[in-house]
Image 1 (cartoon, rainbow, N blue to C red):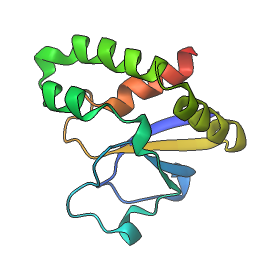
Image 2 (image 1 turned 120 degrees about the vertical axis):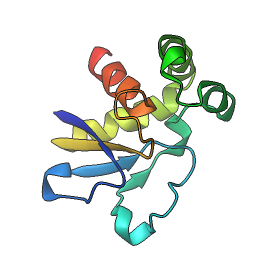
Image 3 (image 1 turned 90 degrees about the vertical axis):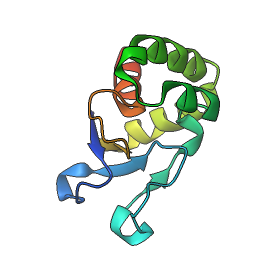
Image 4 (image 1 turned 90 degrees about the horizontal axis):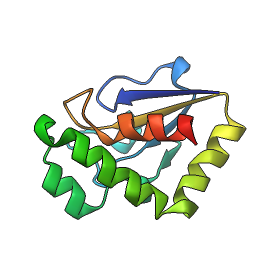
Length: 116
């Protein structure tokens, strides 16, 4: 099973496999057709409160990771939904809209899924 991450603004490719948007908000400037999503799993995204607190500030990254993992642990139904997708598909790409490719929820989610 391969779990990749990719900005939603990067064009879709055949190597993406099952495409899952993991943002709570729809990314600006991307049409549903362009997104080529298989699923928008907004419930797995960080809460609005956590997202707004973090504000994509790298200085808050370690604390963001901890808080987001707590939220994931408190949301087992949605995490299980993602695990089922992973079981059924050889390749899954988690899509996110943030500009920062190293400090975003998809990075945390990818690590979380591999550890559990």
